[in-house]
Image (cartoon, rainbow, N blue to C red; front, side):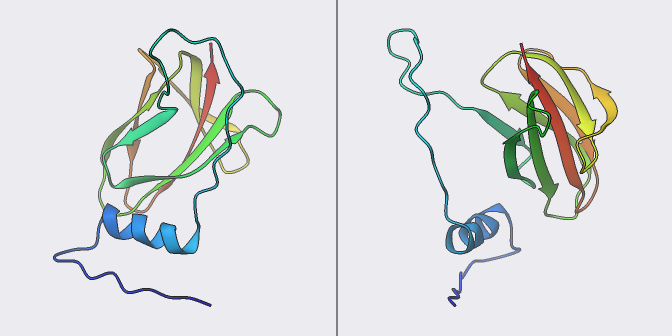
Length: 130
């Protein structure tokens, strides 16, 4: 059993959530398979999400083996539009339910997908690389 106090000013936000994850759920990283990349490309960002009130909880291969499932949630009781950016081209994307069934299409453009979110919503997105 462990606990930690994280002093901060103002409201709790993404930094507070990040600190909680560091103590409760340490990062597990795997070295990727070697690929032939161009000179000077030592790394790349797999994905990112904005705004900061959206936290990516899970990145996993889809249960049927086709594409990736990204599960995130909203943390600050806000609503609006978000953008998920990938480090790879997308052929298609859709919003899914928790069982990975298609709910609605998303329109991937320039390695980005835009979606609406509501306060504390759990968001599941299915991505299909090109």
